[in-house]
Image 1: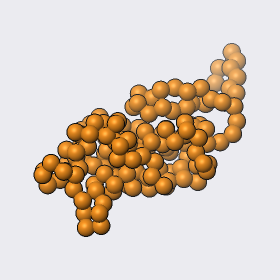
Image 2: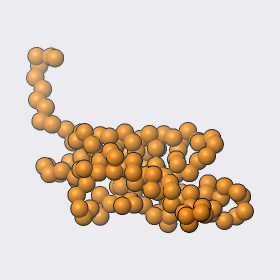
Image 3: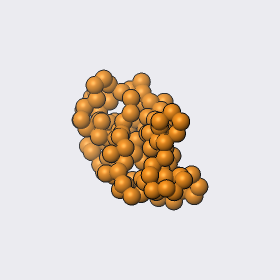
Length: 146
C-alpha cells in the first residue's frame, strides 16, 4: 500500500521541484524506466516499505482520515529524500530523520497516532511539519526529590 501519490508530492513540495529531482536526463520530462516506473513511483514505494517495516504491524485497516494524512506526510518526506541522487540539502535530511524518529516512536508505543486505544492524547505540531501526538503517563511528583 502506498501512503502518498505523485500528486501529493507535487502539492507538498511543488511540481517544479519534483520534476527537477525526477528528470535525471534533463529533457524536461520525468524519466520512466523499462518497467514503466518513474523515480517518483520508486521513491513512493521505498517510503511505503520504510513505513511498513517500522509500524506496519500497528496499522489498523482501514486507516482513519487523520491517520492516512499523517502517513501521507511521512511518506512525502521519505520519498523526497529518496529522489535526491547527489547532494541532499540538510533540511531534507532533517525532515527524513524526523519522520523516521517519529515512526520509530510510534512502533515503540511512545508516540500515539491513533493506532492504539486509550485516552485521546494531545496533538502537537512537530517542528518538521509532520503532525505528531504526544502522550504522557500518570506521573506523580512529590517533594522528596528523585
